[in-house]
Structure formats: C-alpha cells, structure tokens
Image (cartoon, rainbow, N blue to C red; front, side):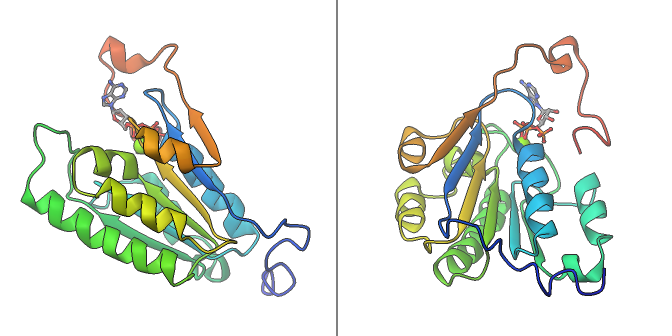
Length: 192
Ligand code: ATP
Ligand code: MG
C-alpha cells in the first residue's frame, strides 16, 4: 500500500481528454454518484477537489470516510465546504450562504484555471447557480477554459440549458419512486 501511487499516476491508456459531466434531475443519486467517482479516481491516484456548495457542518458520512482514507490517498483529496450548516432553498437563502458559496466559487475558479487537479467535483453547483450565487455566464466561461485533461463534474437539480449544452455527459436522474414522498426525511448513512 505504501507506494500505491508510485506506478499508478494517471492511466497510461487514458485518452488524455477530460470531460464536463452533469448529474441532474429530481431523483436520488446525484451527489452519491459524484462521490463514487471521487473514490474511483482517488484509487488511481488522481488529484481530486470536492467543493460542496450549500453544505456546511460536519454531519456527512462521506466526510468521515474521506478523513479516514490512507494518508497516500487522503493527500490527493481536497475538500472545501462552501455553505452554512443547513439545507438551503430559494425561500431561506441569506447573505451567509452567498458569502460561503462565492468564496467556494473563487477557489473553484482558481483551481480550474490553474490546472491544480485531475478531477474537480462541484457538488450542488447547479443549485448555487439557480440561487443566483454563481453567475451562469462566468461558470460557462470558466468551463470553456478548463485545462484539456481535467474532468469536471457539476451536480444538482435544475441544471441550466447552457450548462447542458457545453457538457459532454449529462445524466438526468428521474424519481420513479422516492420514500421522501411518503414523509421519510433524509437518513443518516443513506442521505448524509
Ligand atoms: P444523494 O446525496 O443521496 O445522492 P442527490 O444529490 O441526488 O442525493 P439532492 O437533490 O442533492 O439529492 O437532495 C438532497 C436531499 O434533499 C435529499 O437527500 C432529500 O433528503 C432532500 N429532499 C428535499 N426535497 C426533496 C424532494 N422533493 N424529493 C427528494 N428529496 C428531497
Ligand atoms: Mg445532491
């Protein structure tokens, strides 16, 4: 395990092209899909940045898991929480959300344009755009100037058509059934 990353840095068969992926829709699995991708990429010793827009606080199972990865893998992962410790909707958003999200977006922009990672996950970026806290035109401009080899994932409901238009992969998760509709709220270990 000690030298996992020595001979494993970036798949030699990789096409040397990174894509823009979007996981959207009202069904469950957008953030979990992106976290699964992070785990997969980390196993290949990719440098990964996970920005969690609208999500503050400590109460996320994934954060506990990530913190307990081996040092070698953990060192390739940077996590930035850009949000307050509560769920943000359009009716309860406030200035604190705006400040946190904008700070996170500044860091994301820098990380993308400076080519600091192999994979960047912008979790709930679609929501941050929808809330009006990330400027859509600026997001499009940054995505258009991403480094050739970098993979970028945007998650969250209500992806804008302009984002869908420049993405290379868009998955829309459709809620055929969800226990949420029977009154079951978010469950520890399953939703957070
Ligand atoms: P996961 O994080 O499990 O992959 P997701 O990223 O696809 O889910 P989001 O759209 O980010 O899901 O929603 C996050 C949480 O919001 C859900 O886990 C759920 O508890 C809650 N939620 C709020 N409103 C709804 C709704 N109408 N239907 C389903 N879940 C909802
Ligand atoms: Mg989500």
